[in-house]
Image (cartoon, rainbow, N blue to C red):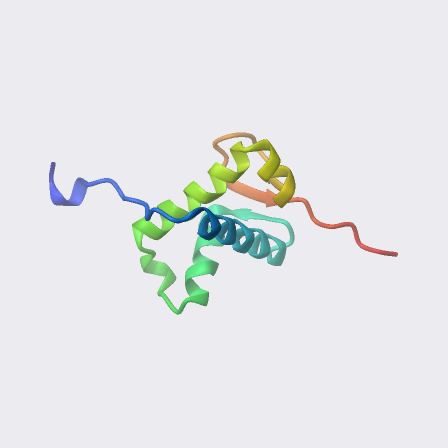
Amino acid sequence: MDQDQTPARRKRLSKPARERMVDRIREILMHFGGEAHRREVIAHMVKEKGVDSRHIPEDLEATVIHCFEEAWRDEHRREAHGLVLRFGEGSHRWGVRMPELAH
């Protein structure tokens, strides 16, 4: 296989690190008003780390996507984090249920 065609490898994160990643994804989605394209979530995350968002490391992108998808597929974790996929499984439009505003 050609060097340019190797698939992106995601970093193996510990369970607590994956939970922190999902918590961070949730916070970013709330920052965007409850939903955003996954590309925007990842770009926001790398900008916070001082990385040029035009050149997102493929392993980081794969790790973030995997953490969200893993949490979304687990019914308990999906409910705990309030994760939603507005257009169903496979959608790149990620969302989170926003807490009700107190009146």
